[in-house]
Amino acid sequence: MLWYYYYSIFCATAKMRRAMRQKRGVNMEDTIAAISTSTMSSGGISIVRVSGSEAVNIADTVFKSKKNIRLADVKSHTVHFGIITDGESEIDEVLAIVMRAPNTYTREDVVEIDCHGGILVTKKVLDALLSAGARLAEPGEFTKRAFLNGRIDLSQAEAVIDVINAKNDYALKSSVNQLDGKLSAKIKEIREILLNNVAFIEAALDDPEHFNIDDNVDNLKNDVNNCLNKVDKMLKTCENGRIMHDGVRTVILGKTNAGKSSLLNVLAREERAIVTDIEGTTRDILEEMINLSGITLNLIDTAGIRKTEDIVESIGVNKAKKLAGDADLIIYVVDSSRHLDDNDYEIIDLIKGKKVLVILNKTDLNQVTGAEDIKNIIDCEVVAVSAKQETGIDELEDTIKKMFFNGDISFNEDVYITSTRHKELLGQAKESLQLVLNGIDNMISEDFLTIDLMTAYEKLGLIIGEEVEDDLADRIFSKFCMGK
Image (cartoon, rainbow, N blue to C red; front, top):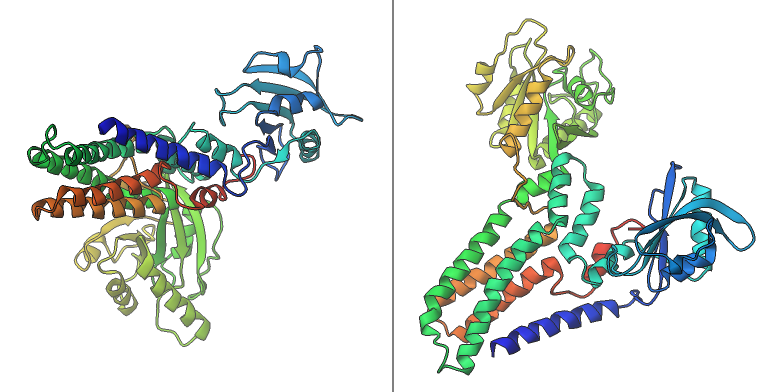
């Protein structure tokens, strides 16, 4: 019974991969080609990639070796110097790299043409390959083939685009960990435990003489608790994962002329906001993405909060208040050279209960408001700076880092969940595992427990692509750039 169950799972997985290959728009028999470097500007080198069963033959049609050899006759993973021709004229001197399946990114034959980095010449090289029989690749089709051919799983494929789009060191390290298979390993470990228990229950129901379900209840409960703890641990990383991936939604608040725009300019290291001595200069929001000690801050500078009869300024003040409600972090800028007034107390009432960092600005002037004055009113971190003289900025950066990541993150073993899709599936798996525990406590028949065990197994499988929903891969790979 056990071998039959495992064989059934294996066949189901293979069937899903075959079904994915046969889906609309995925013709694995085609040989595809695309430019794999930027098409927005010229560079020193551009790469045109070809993948498929006819990759070498198609490349041979347009490539003429300086040594008069054919690419079809060379060893795998070798580089050859020659020219690309469209049949009528020479296009460029290039290097052709030949890589034979299965030891390639797609597990297909791959040829990469390294040509000079001009936009026009790169497109002409691609056109020559398309004329020779290749098809233009869809966005993400190289990585999709790597997934469909079993080189990487779906979570690793998603990590590829996350590496490309990483905005900071934390996001990059997290994505590289996922690409390296750390998330996959954790998911597979949990699924293996669940599958073992399902197989045992199925075997015991079919062959009660050799398998005793009653003796296995405690083991089942321990295994499910163990799996639930592992899933819950991953779910607890979601908030840090979101911040690493998307950045910290940061709103700068303060009354007029507290120095909010000056602080933004210092952090952005350029004059992004207009700074004057006139109150109410900033009337609308100004957004800027900055990298602060490896953390991405999505900074929003807002209008100074005060009571005003100016309609336009009033709209800006209301926007500031609304944005504060959705922020991960509020930077409340206080003019330390002035006493707190009604506008300050209105802001303090607005931000109580939020994650707040108070900046005592203008420390280059005589201070009349200090850290104790703030801490007596609101429990928060306080940093003294002078935006004008750019002092205290290092302490500001360190404080923000500690507020979100306790100062540092160890990436040796930790896996951070950065994908909303993964978060939802882990949450659904957790619910199913909890149902199993409830069923055990209520002494529900074991054959009913297998339903929830298999639901958890399938939800986790969707993360790594062992289970595939309709059009799931299409949705994921459509976000990729051309040539990847």
